[in-house]
Amino acid sequence: MTCFLEYPDDFDAYTVVVHDLVHTRDPANGDWSLNAHSYRKLRLSHAWVLERFRGAGLRVVHERGGPGSMRTVVLKRAS
Image (cartoon, rainbow, N blue to C red):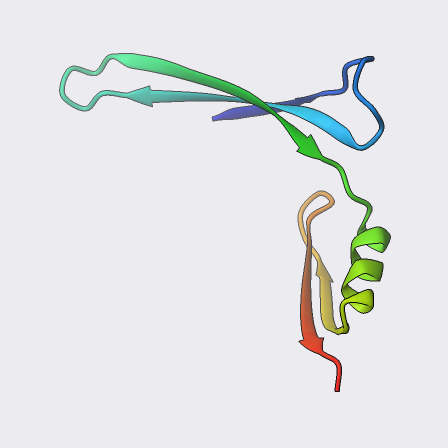
């Protein structure tokens, strides 16, 4: 699988175009095929998302950074 991002000039600062290229091999005959898809994805800042959680009555109980810019956040409903 190959995935790449595109930031075209006609898109705003809140979106990105994601392209997925998936190569699969047929186990019966060994032939390869390619499936390609693209879609727009929303770009949200971590701070903006956390603020929305707080506004919805949730609080962060654990937060950890992962590979790249991936983050894990555990939330709990505020008392």
